[in-house]
Length: 347
Image (cartoon, rainbow, N blue to C red; front, side, top):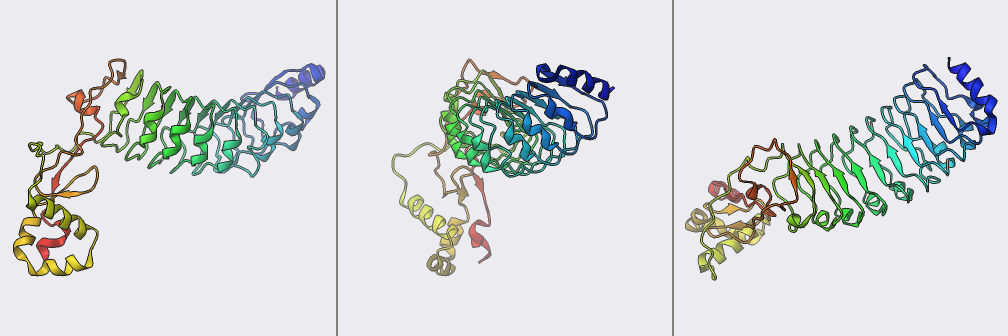
């Protein structure tokens, strides 16, 4: 069947624009493709192709290439010759690397689909994809993304679901045209403040991460859809706020200084504190702010700010957290008492 389809395509010569060989058990990309210089679309998904033939470099008019669900192990170097390519589908392969130079000639690429592969890193050279608008990297093994990715000025949609990301670079603020950002099912602990500069962002999915709080200015985003279920936003109960005082007591001021110096392992204070059991007893009552990491004794309101979500946001309905005003807050202060603060109780 594949042979008959190829023969028919070859008869068309330079006038053949589309070749489709889906699910034909093809193990090698046909080298005769070089005889089709006018080809615009090449669809070879759901086959057994492990390498791209060198002859593909002659297809300089190709705009769409689909090699999804094959056996490729890398984004091949031959891609750089496809200077007219706009859509590249490489989903469902075994790709774990980019070949050197693979991004060099793809100046017109608009869509890149690398879902369901084995990528652990993205090369800095991705910044060469100057026209990239849609980038999908779902279901890989990425632990980070390069800051260079954030300089793709035309990027409108970025999908990074089901990876192993811990954080997002602050440089994300440069993706001024980003409208859709999907980060669900990763290991992200916090969102960068730069995210709040994405004024065109309309869809944000951070479900299934380990985020406990949102950055300042988060409530200013003009989102239409927001998904954040599965984060530990309410696993810890915030301590009831103490009445704000314009002036701290001398004991509070001194205690904060000593506790934070001990946390920084100031050698002088760590040695001296051994001789003051009464001071050690007082400091053992100290608490640590989960947001800024600073220590306090009794009064702490500096980090607590709550904001209601925008009325325009569409919030995922399966959230189990109440009230929503607490959920959408720029800070959440979980002040936890530590009886062994700095090891003082053990001195």
